[in-house]
Amino acid sequence: MSRQQRLFRRLHGFSGGSDPLGVINPLNLLHLEQYFDSTMGLSGVADGGNVNPWPDQSGNGRHMINQVFGTVPVLHRTGTKISANGSPTVEFNGVNTSMRAVITPDPGQSRGMTFIHYGRFRDSTAGFGCSVPWEGGTNREPQLLLENDAPEQKIGWRDLVATRKGAKQTFPFYGSVVWRFTQPNVGEVFVNGVNVLTDVWTPSGATDTIVDMGCNASGNCVQNADWCAWL
Image (cartoon, rainbow, N blue to C red; front, side, top):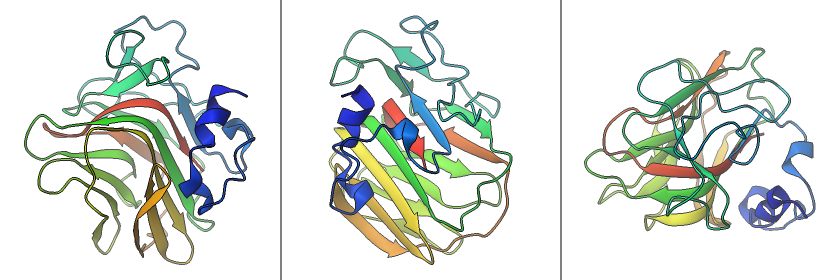
């Protein structure tokens, strides 16, 4: 069983409480729009080196590139910032790390969307504390949120109508965060398979050609990513 298959066994939230994905490689999943992995496509990046681009492994060529603002993420192969299973991680620094991908054609929102982040979610250093693991461009929602500054420490999303936040979480933690949006208007968040938020999701219906990942203000949640997927 591959590393990705083992990780997917823990994503009970993705399947609504059952685990049909236990023997499925994420690279074979239907509607895989983007897939980024700290162990794939980065063999030429040294320990502590910059990750730019972070190659998309879905086959769609939607690579993440720093072309917005701030700095690029860093690859950690040794030390305290590696994965709990000993693999490398890609670190978003919680201050100004950001990346962008072109997603032409836009897959749209008609069948819903699922976003999966697997890795270590660490404390912010000060202040605002809200990272954006994934978001669309100017007109596209949802904007995924990780708020780890006291007293919030909540995970949720922002759509065209409101900002939705789930139960308070304890940072730092290691594992999976899954955002699942299903038509016509239901959004859910799962942390390590436990549902922490179910609320109304308001789809934008907009067409866009970019998607961003990262953070844009000091004091954001530091993320050491094993892998990320958008389905």
